[in-house]
Image (cartoon, rainbow, N blue to C red; front, side, top):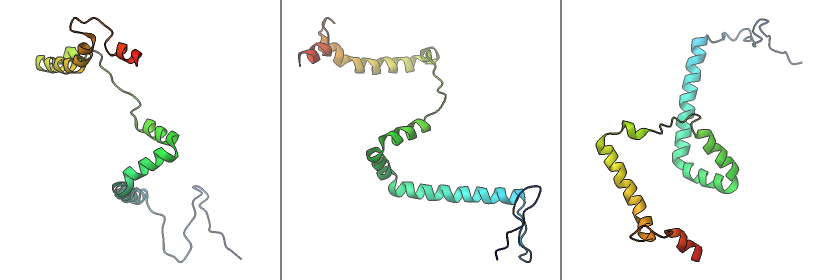
Amino acid sequence: MTVKPAKDPKTGRFLPRSGQGTTIPRPRTRKAVRSKLGELFLEDMLSAWEARGAAAIHALIEKSPNDFLKTIAALMPKDVAINPNQMGEMTDEQLLERIRKLDQTIRPFLAASGADGTGDGDRAAAENE
């Protein structure tokens, strides 16, 4: 015959068996245990990541691309602060650097459309292919 452990009528928690000398941990103790458990878990996760992280990602992409995308979406921030007028807050040096980068980016497209800026750029070449 199995004897069921007694429960505290107020909390519903199981009471320690008599004669074992154990007591219910105080909330501070449980918090410390939970914190330590969390630290150990994260250390193990880091170790596993360092050993097989990239391989696990590639395996997930191959086996379940939907789950991979769900994971990426879950990691993305919920709120993204966008400042459309960032140029108003930039220094002159930062503005010049931005202009130089844009110039480098669009220069190939301008060259493809002709020196005078006429033509369809890369679109005309793509349509003829």
